[in-house]
Image (tube, rainbow, N blue to C red; front, side, top):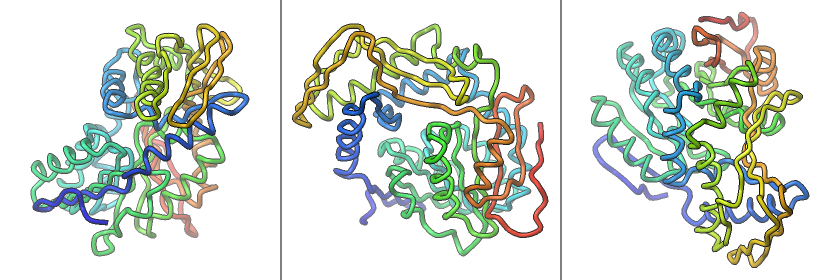
Length: 342
């Protein structure tokens, strides 16, 4: 694969091309022909969706980003000490705003040699790759434009076999159902050598009112973000959804301990999706599930990591214990159990 950007210390490669449109078409065809309609949350993140998510992170109700940043600010030095990492691979890197705290700690420890941002949005990967290279002298940047569910094999081998961190932050692991979640954890584990670590962000179970407010902010930004997936389908598949004809719904499922986001049709409608040669019928108040966001207990986190062949090293939480960053590594004999830090 020829790089799409090559500069001093910067390489960016894309593995999407026509595959992104193909993935959307497959997901829409599969999800909207089910008895209970679904669309996967990865299609939220076109340019408009990414901007809306940035605005969500600034809403007073949305605590996860602030809590995770607090952990990084308090514990990045400890993460650098525990891992000795020369490389940071970040899946779903986005703007890498929080990541710079960890990159600073690795640089200050004298170990940082390469950063690998991996994201589905090409412009974002280009911008992040060039800005990190300019901010961190002598650090190489290898950007990957791709779908982390499909393209993990394109993550490069570690620099000279030195230790690395594979980071999956923001609680995005909660978007997977339990079986898929453990499968994806195994996929990330396949990127790790014996001296490497997985740094995983997980939102914690808490008061349902706090959780539901985080996904249904008073300013309506999350509602706009949710409806934007219909605009993506309209644009990419020549559909005729009226996003304003769908209500935003968010609630905490106490049985599964996850948040669900849905779009609820306000009336009966028949929506053509010309790119697929089909029409989709909706009854009044019929819902499309667009996201789950699982919340974790310590026991669930440890069990999921163990099922993926990973040993828990440490769990770091913010002072209010709203969010957690865990460090784990490939399972091995006679390793001590993980420990919790605040």
